[in-house]
Image (cartoon, rainbow, N blue to C red):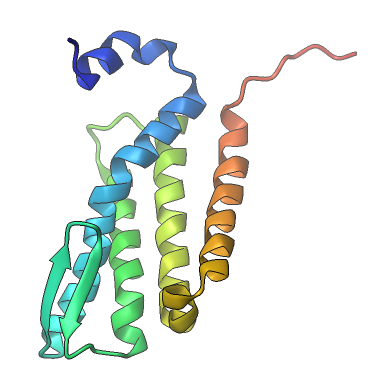
Length: 155
């Protein structure tokens, strides 16, 4: 049975650019999410808390450093981590790669703002999380539009 890597290598040129951008987003979501959690962890350790990062992308600190610097630093680390991907020279800077990374950057900027300034809603409101998810989907939709091929016929 072929592994995912072999399947992607054999069929990569057949995948539309929109699919490639979504694959990049999916591949980067967890590692950049871990960098996001390292931001919370770093501030927690600096503020003399005992912190643990869980594999499901949550950081728990005891005592909890309940201030906006702690909450915003995760999004800042995530944004910086994903922005650094744009500086790699070995990765071919194609439109689908740039759009996939831009979506990750947008997600972490949104997380930074929401975690810092609407933290109780971010943790406890299902409606707020649906609104955040909707914003992410709307941004992804509009950022993927340039990758959709259009016909050049004028009627």
